[in-house]
Length: 328
Image (cartoon, rainbow, N blue to C red; front, side, top):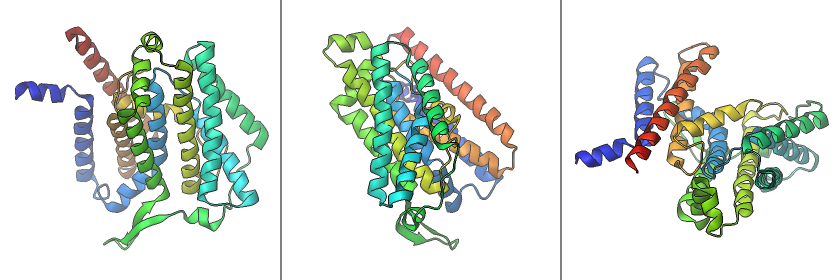
């Protein structure tokens, strides 16, 4: 029994889940608004884009890479999608196809560059981040887009019901996309041969190559998947904010990276879980929402977030060293 308990407590996700429960309990005691259906729905909707992008970055990190350029890919996909919709109309199928196609193309560019140049992925994706953003701002001159069709502005609201507070709730577009992306990523990484190969490449690139795995193909899959999810996030953000701004996601890469690493995913590849990533997103969402409800200055949001991330990363690093020392 003690061995099982020790094994259970050795998982980063258990400690992270306990921290989230303590945070939720503390916030519910300090403010009565935190655990209301309305607030929790707003949190899920507001942070859906963070969860979607975190799933894509999780796959990249597991493969032993990193992608810093996804905010620019999201912004470009969003602008192309919105411009096309304003000019020619369409439906949700067409806007998702355009945004995801655009994101896929940009992701494949990253994959090819990372695989062939043999330069650290962080250097290449920082370069493409600036390149993509620069081209977008130059082409658009910083112009905002708004005034979308009613069908896009209204979105979807499946399984809707009226709660006791008088407001209507249901499965909205951001929530549906977050759920679909999470399930798809989980199936990909846990139940497919491709997912096992991605873990293998992240664990030991040379060994994966010797086993006959095509590293170029795997890079294209990984970075292309990040691009696809950037396209999904582009539609979600445009529908949520009802506008498109070229610079709306500047600096967002650090927030997403923090959520994934907070969930226990190793920066060196091969280690991490999607559940941990989801918990990392949940912790950041609860923390920032709680600080807002408590009327804490936004400057302190970064301080508290930084402290929690630092403690979590330190705990993860210590746990990995302890496992290596024991030969686990």
